[in-house]
Length: 305
Image (cartoon, rainbow, N blue to C red; front, side, top):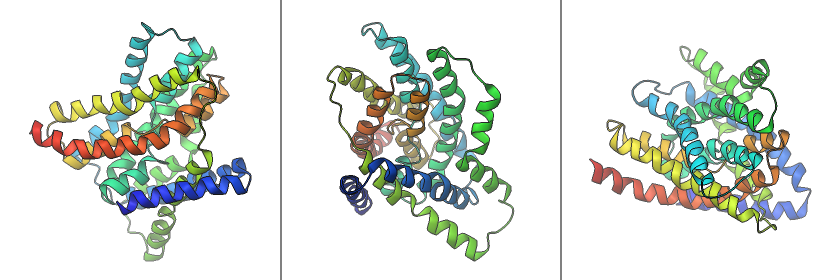
């Protein structure tokens, strides 16, 4: 509970700061610190000692399964709700990827504890690859632009969290010096306050009521349908999973849409206004749905087993 209270305090402080300074500059600075310092430090710290055997397949697979579920759900809804090509592409891109680091890590840590971050990192890195492969493919397909495979691979390999992942795996045979371990741990601990301050700064509400229909569709798929599909797989197909691995995988896939996906949607002109609202509204709602999943899952696991 104290972790959740801390998150809401940070968001409130962020919102207050957005009124006292230029919010866009503040958000840009906070996100830069997260992507280039706090998140790589956390990954270097955790991936160095993480157990990649056993249950690792499920957290790796869940972002890919989630993306497929999002595509199927959106095309099913299209049978009843007309939507343009760019809106369809926007919904697939935003619903198909999850905010597994900026929002996922702090919430998973607050609700499930320090140990859960090991699995959360695996889901996050797989989710990142989904974004830069399937996400880029969808963005180009629905915007009518060609796919640059070389550029796509470069984007993946130079992204600081991916660089940290590769370094962390290569350094696994070697023990970190105490000073390095302390530095990584300290910088990694900045992730939650920095991301929550950034989220508080960016909170907005839509003024165009016609947008609410597609926001509702997108967030229902993202926060309810996708984690429900993963939960059913964990409970009835992958029955040997540890409860913690299942809980983290479900919670991560059920996070709000990814901030990086918003940037791609804007770059490809895939209804960028809708993309922004799916993220800015989805993030605070995902706090509530994450808590609900955390309450419901133990009962579901006890019933299934």
